[in-house]
Amino acid sequence: MRQKQLRISGYTTTARMIEQLDVNSPYASLLYESELESVSNTWAQDFGGYGYLLRQSYHHERISCSSKTNGTFFVEHPQISFLAAGTPGMLPQIVSSTEDGLYSRFLIYRITGPSPYLPLDSCDNSKSSVRYYENLGMRVLDMAIHLDGSPTFVSFSDKQRKRLDRYFEREYYNANVFGNEDVSSVVLRHRLAIFRIAMTLTGIRKGESRSAETEIEIADEDFDTAFKIGKVCLRHSMLVSTSLKHGNNNAHYKMPDAQLSLFAAMSDEFKTSAILEEASVRKISRASVFRMLKKAQAYSLVSSLGGGYYRKNRCGKENRR
Image 1 (tube, helix red, strand yellow):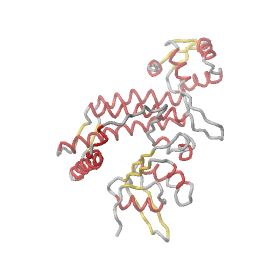
Image 2 (cartoon, rainbow, N blue to C red):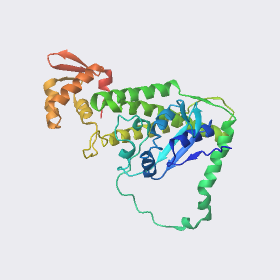
Image 3 (tube, one colour):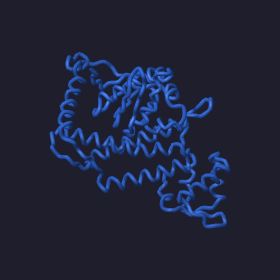
Image 4 (spheres, helix red, strand yellow):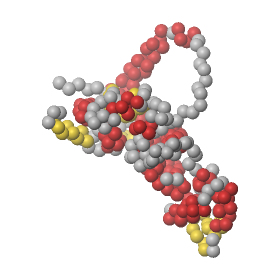
């Protein structure tokens, strides 16, 4: 008899993970590790390269496995969350390049600098702290039981959709024009992540109130929370993406918006000579400037007026840093 185990270890074979996702369906599984090394060590083995499963599961695409030893499994709607912590040096062992589709499916938060020292106090003597997370877990279980018996359709409001579109249209064009085109998928998938966070918050509210509503529009408060989380994680993902290289060169973190800042510094109408002069001060090459202007025209951020003059279009004017 196969048993549901919603918690999945990072040290799991590919075949076993597919089997467990099949057993756990229709409920989501959680792969949680406090050290990324447990995952990277597994992926280094022939039996443990399950990165592609995470890519497919992100979009709930059908996954399958067939072997003489393990038989055949088809998971029609895989659902799995992946939560892990690790040092910056561990990430490239999981994702070596931004061209790896797995990178754009992660929400990344990079912690820098030393944390403050937290002194001991009388709260540490409380017996209730031992059961703190257990009690939270029981609250989540109660909500899950209610939601399991009350399917819910969650949607954005028109105002929320327009706000998302304004922000992500700008960020998408910024990634293509001023950064590396291979991170444009990072932008688009953060838009999806924001919806999933907002959907989860909506589910929590319904579960706590024991509501029987089947169609719920995301509350503005939950949308704002999800939007802020998504924006912060997107900035962190863009920052960390500059440390991922295709070759073996040593990588250093650097802000990826040098060209964006240059473009934002230009007036609504500017000359080629003016942007080249400013680029020289910022140590940006002529070739990079002309390449940027070509892409900016292709994505309708600017229009060429001829004679070395350019005018920013609507999207271009919104780039204010």
